[in-house]
Image 1 (cartoon, rainbow, N blue to C red):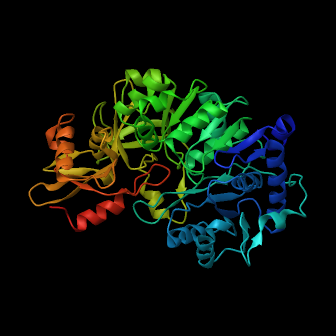
Image 2 (image 1 turned 180 degrees about the vertical axis):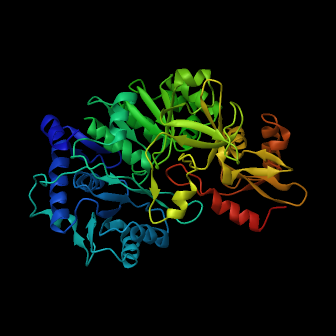
Image 3 (image 1 turned 60 degrees about the vertical axis):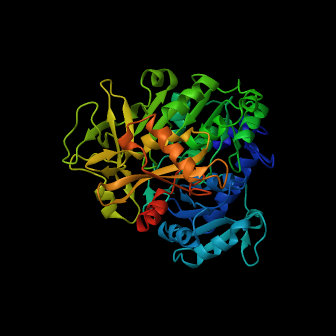
Length: 510
């Protein structure tokens, strides 16, 4: 798993192919550039355990920078470039970055972040030149292209999406191992998902997100090729699978829905027979959507449930899922416990908070109170999700505790309602939450992004409510529906639910 050895073995083989531009980065070139950047890091005084921030769109320059940090023993934080200037500045400052490497196309965001980061000692730009900011290409030109003598494994330090307040940094522990030992995800990809030098992996999401960056780097560690989409498009994804003979891909639920809503003739026009594995995560997939994906692509879907915190990892493959529809699997790292609010373990079938034991501890950067709040007196940790296990130990997710709707004393889980409505042909996207109600405490409200912009009418709202009632219990169905031209969903697939909840709870629809 050492990049130098991989470069010797694979040379001109592409490690990275950009889907839009067609730009390619070979193993040999990735080795050369990442060594030069690592040498630059050392020349600028960065030592193992120091921190850099990376602010880039999905572009080829991203990979040499993060590989240089990985082989230099640094923490590196990819910053979500969809954030506001204040949010991005908070992350660059909070992580203690000494160096910021940013795309010239994001200069306004980069300059704002740099102005608010007290530990920052310098900036480098890639892509379009930025007046007054040093170019990375010029900075590394005099640097040797040999490895630094003290190569150690670094680690990416990710931040949450900030859907419930300020983003929080998830601080991993550096392994202290020599570069080439790899991270846990690298061996998991090989041992559980069959990644190898023959793998062609389609990366569909933004590289600042945990799964795209982790799986893309892991593909390279295992000698494969990563095809990186600059942004997701359902038809383009199918074109890439056919053209590059993609063997492995990683998707989120909204991508599946968009692919399934393509006309059947359009879907069947593409050859997807090269696919061996389709991995999905980040957001739950409804039973109906997953059934349709398996019917289309075959029993090659694998779902995992995990957080960037690394406190547990559940996995389920298609054959097991077809026997346990709706499950996210059994743990392959740690043990799962379902507990009541009092901390007592619940029997199978009952919904409670999901806790993990038997995995490494993690902490939230600069927030000991938040860290303490996710551990119980047994040392188990939770991400705040709720769920249940069946008699065979398979885990089923319900919702996050903060998303739970309490209506008339009854717990209602938004995900079940969203799943019921997601495949209605008039629905492009949907989010469900509770809004104040004098009689019930809260009532179920749906906000829908219609498939045809501007088509949200009272008649469609009534149709959607009736459609939902035909599929789930009447008391769970929305009592009101609003329409938005576009819902605030991150490219990673995560819905910014809190933004809508705050707005609609402040002025509830009649």
